[in-house]
Image (cartoon, rainbow, N blue to C red; front, side, top):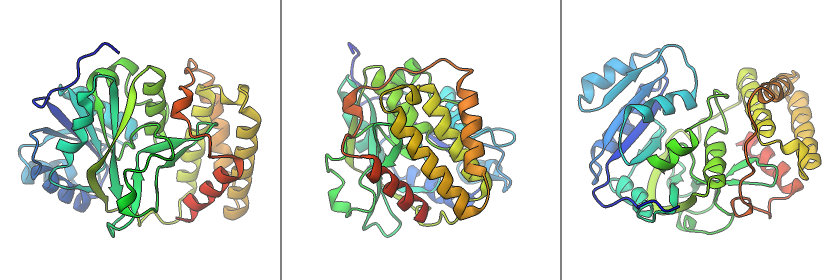
Length: 321
């Protein structure tokens, strides 16, 4: 890329998007306060109903707080937080992730390579024995999956499946790369924004790296529960919106993508006895028509081993989880 790598003295901004969940946020910020690497923490709040901004200011006076109204979504909160900082490295961290003391030091290290634009950290499940994710993987239809999910924690350094990029729940970005591609796409409010940013960074020529020893515990990973109609519609919207932005349905993988979405939306309708997932997909495709297409990411950002049947199985397992 011709850019200089970051140095050991690089400045670091940690952006924590919030909407309620003060107990998680308080614990997350206490873990950040114990980091071995100097940094600035920015809480970007989306109108929390539990007084999160005031509580943060009272308990953590060194943390910067940005207040928003309503809940415009994850992408908006993150973009607003990143724009408020100036660090050479930006770390996105969900408020329900508790990081080990050397987390920032280790997740920033791969960015010393000037070709690296983003770094995936290791997220463990609440029991700390199994992996929640080590970044994201993408199949040929650009559907995303949590890499190494469910495997033993000792396998966090595994090379397969291929890494597309970091999860927005715990990942580092070179600010120059982030700003070059425009940050997260605010065309969706929830779901898949981190994967789409990962693919856009790869399409722009930036490499993604893994920091398997940068460890956080995803305290909320086991508490998803049954998703509401609104959540399923939002997920359907995001999937179809990004299918549209990348013109996947017009590509050689279009028939597979269409078949997959028909199966998934049909199964969702049968299971929940509503058309939320289908409505979301229709709305997402319509919204994508109004924005320019994205360039397809390079093939080394795609995991070829995730075939049609495997992708359906992974969708099923993700819903069951």
